[in-house]
Length: 141
Image (cartoon, rainbow, N blue to C red; front, side):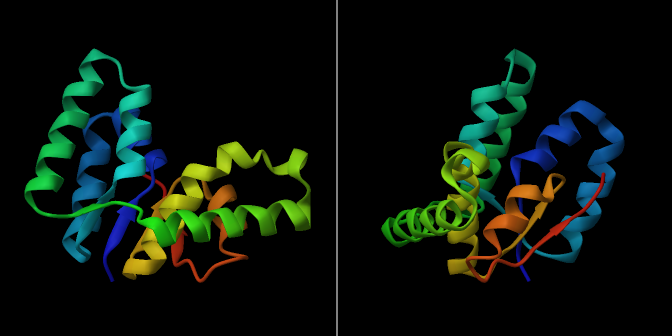
């Protein structure tokens, strides 16, 4: 099954240095790797000068390989419905809907394409998986 790393995996890898690259390379050998445009946005938003060059290379490499996953209209709509369901069940204030928007877009576009999301921060994806058939897992680097 194809995989997609949540931004938490890339951020953890950037902070950990080259040792984590070996772990990521092993995962990629097991399954085709995709990059979400939402993850790309999150990485650019948090990148300093050094990290920005790494993120730019990620963008170029995934774009060249034709493996950038971009949410479409149905993904945006489904994400809104999921967020409404989460808010209805757990309350608007408790879940921080704005924080979940990006993860909901990652989840819905991954579901649409049969892609497994890998994250180092499972809380949000566990919550979203209650409302859509998301395939996801936590992996430590």
